[in-house]
Amino acid sequence: MKEYNKINCQNYAMDTPKKILEYDVVIVGSGAGGGISAEVLTKAGLSILIVEEGPLRTNESFKMKEKTAYADLYQEAAGRQTKDKGIQILQGRSVGGSTTVNWTSSFRTPSQTLNYWQAEFDVKGLARRDLNPYFSWVEKRLNISKWQIPPNKNNQLLADGAKKLGWSLDSIPRNVNGCANLGYCGMGCPINAKQSMLVSTIPNALANGAKLISRARVESVIIQKGKAIGVWLTAMDQRGQVKDKNVTKVIAKKVVLSAGAIGSPAILLRSKETNKKDTLNPNKALGKRTFLHPVSVTIAKMPDKVNAFEGAPQSVYSDQFLWRDGVNGEIGYKIEVPPLHPALSSTMMSSFGEKHQSLMKDFAYYQANLALLRDGFNEESVGGQVLLDDNQYPILDYQISDGIFRGLRHAMEKMTELQFAVGAEKVHPLHLDATGYRNFTEAKSAIANLKADKIRWQTMSAHVMGGCTMGSNEMNSVVNSDGEHHQIENLNVIDGSLFPTSLGVNPQLTIYSIAAKLSENLARKMGKFSFSLFTE
Image (tube, rainbow, N blue to C red; front, top):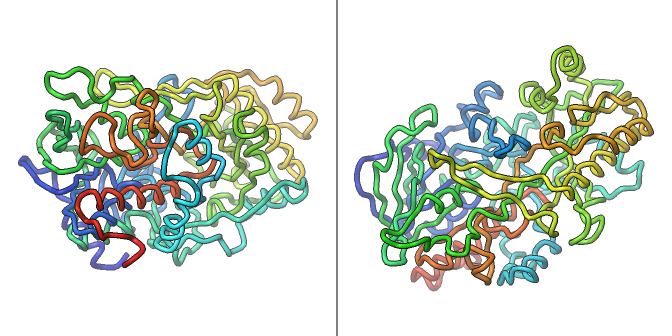
């Protein structure tokens, strides 16, 4: 990080002040949507306040230690789960959001997904031809390109298996600059090689006059006469717990929610217009159609050490089964690998006693594959719903449907086949009833009979999307195609909660690019008529 970036970030990370603040725009959240929006809107000459619930950290804080990173940088100390405990959810919670802790995989949105949004939700202005200039701008801005360094062994085994089986295969584009191939991206980059919002757009926005308040939760949007006029801030303590509620009133001409696909719906659910019925959610679409890319995992014991904790976490992928039965048919999936670090992996491989000890003793020899299930494209996959508990804290009610279980099972079988194709001694699918199988015939038969149970099937996700669905029909969407709330003026949503479905690819590049387009549109609507990202 450039020194002025670090100094500016530190200077503007104020404690939540007990007073009234005024800005042109308040941006809630500093992840992919908020970070891009902050840079674009400050370039347009608008006064911006960025509010982040989590702490401000710099590369000096990132020690590549799981015991501190998860508690410090993730929602609920990396322990967030769906309401029924069926899916573990990994989401960032610090300045930079999930971009600070993700594994850097950066894909353009599939045309099939964008076409589906247009056909089913009448989303306008986000066809592939509309987004291509913004994809290109973001890729240049964040140094996104295909990974050229040879993959680590974890990824290489995926590549070898895909080649042997004749499956599609390609390299993953990554948003890095000067990457040292350390392998600890999920704990924050200690050398600032990862071009997250923490080291790119947010420091630039601060240099252009924006202000940042960290450890402050936006409690609610302030609404008067059908218009958003600002937000209430709640101060958080050093442990990430509520310290003082509603201590600061921020007045703004525009409110931009970029708190993510659980956070943004939660803020709107907490918001009410005085003496009005539910103006924010009249058609009960808010919080619904929240998607996860549910993940199935298989772990393979290889004859030689893999050391899946070393090297770029994700560098190759296969889309062989992403559209396996068309857009609307049986759920497809993208195959990648996860990095394996002891603490997080031990929670993934959640067996007990001697069985768990036996699994962990071979840790360095494991190769792991994961499948991202593309949820949201048929009637068996309607997503979950963001709700509030008795303390007004968000929870996600996401039921794993029969269709998703079929997808998890299909993916588990194919990933197991791949691992045996490259010489696995045994493969352990992540299901509480599974064991280590020594050949594909045995594994295939066992997988076909694993109980479709939400607790026994060890499912996880790091991609939360939807909940503030965009579209033209107010009956099944919350905002329009520009991210503007259907019923409340001056209220915009710019983050992954906009998506009417999941993507089928890792979401950060899609969020970046749509955020660039929508924030550019917002700047023009706020009187900056000549502003364009492409004429600077």
